[in-house]
Image 1 (cartoon, helix red, strand yellow):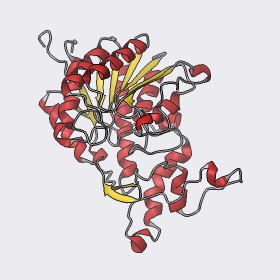
Image 2 (spheres, one colour; image 1 turned 45 degrees about the horizontal axis):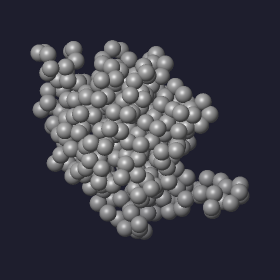
Image 3 (cartoon, one colour; image 1 turned 90 degrees about the vertical axis):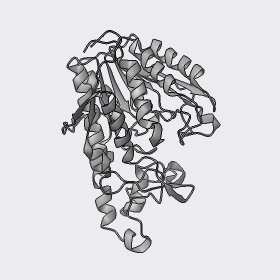
Length: 360
């Protein structure tokens, strides 16, 4: 490889990630066509093949990591929910073949009463799902589990000496909390990558989240920990954007994790200059860590339907360069990005910036 040419990056992916088909999202009571589709996988694969990166098909990884970042009840619910739904009357009664929560047993409902898990799956689903947008169907568990395998395997490659690896995770994961799922996310792939790096010997792991929306799940998993720091640049939830109730600048961690969380919310319409200034800030902030996880959502791009930010492909390429400059071994985990005509090119642009000029 000549000096200045991009390094070929191992791209860990699985055909199983295509199996999740949410069909619709239910937004304000209306079924709308889902944007988190299997076609995202192929759009990214086409672009990364063309860029010359090395495709590595994921193999099943030990399930232990799942229970290091998620409650066992959540994992069991995701594993069995589609089968429980199919055994019920929902397809026949209302034509619904996907698990949609009907009831959310929040403190507003239970009001201190000794609540028990609901017997009916349409009520029990709300114990874990925190929105109506993130449906479970046949193949959802298999796809989410395969995405988790991609993240764990990519982190294993970095632990074994690769300077950079990319996990083509679909469905994405950064909105999945220890005990719940939402925001099109089921299992938290970035958290699994960070856990794997820690288990592999990294004393402190930094996570930089570039998705247009704050990764409330990742923030929650590590909010009281000092060994994993989480920083996010995202559209301001105070302007009415997901995750709406968290992601503000004054959320900095708690207990041992105080100071290990940073949120940099941006105004609607923010483009490359201010977005990259925030990325540079986070890059400096994580530079003293031992390893890096990048939650690569490319839905901050100007053509994406899911956010109002205006980042360009050149902006993503420069973000990659800024995070490469930390010198940290890095796992890049795919999060959002829903504009299929530009999705693959945006991912390739980021990887070109992060990989350029390194030794093979």
